Image (cartoon, rainbow, N blue to C red):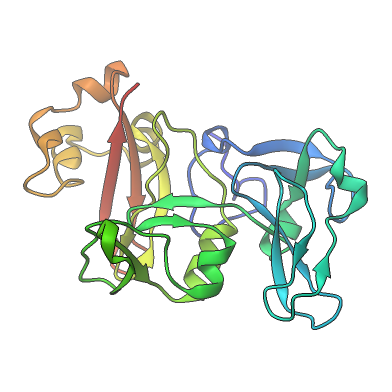
Length: 246
């Protein structure tokens, strides 16, 4: 199974096979730097081009879907969406442009949505009743019991420079040791790459003591009725997982 590292375009937070990346477009012409034969990623809903304000230099995100002009978040000056991209069917960002921060790929996480606005503020978009010991919890809307997590901006930006993976119900990126974890892949990919001696024991170790998945065994994941998404902590090596079904 080919990974991005095999293609010499590694991502610290994505070690799964390339076919699991839903936004990977293969070799194409980057719409940002206009270089051809580059490994590119399609920017879609929630994603943004990151452009400096021509007046004050502050970086701003412009929606890759809406493709409209926006006022600068710092000085209010107008930032124009590149006219050459407005009518394009796809907005493609190559690996280098993505890693250099010229584009941002939004991610859903266990602490709420993270798009470029959240990376700037260092606070996730949150979730109802959110509680965590990993981060300071920030009140976003007390009337709705809605709270975000205050996470270092550099960690959120790293997440935004990482591909999204295929899932049925949408990803929920996991954290450990107060940092985003590295996505290793789905169940079949992980079993093939890690080759655990006891797959059922490996599966049990991915979940907390109260998770109902501990009673399922590996059968639902092998037959495909439930999809598993496995992560590894970059600090302590712990593995965790989320799952969903159609």
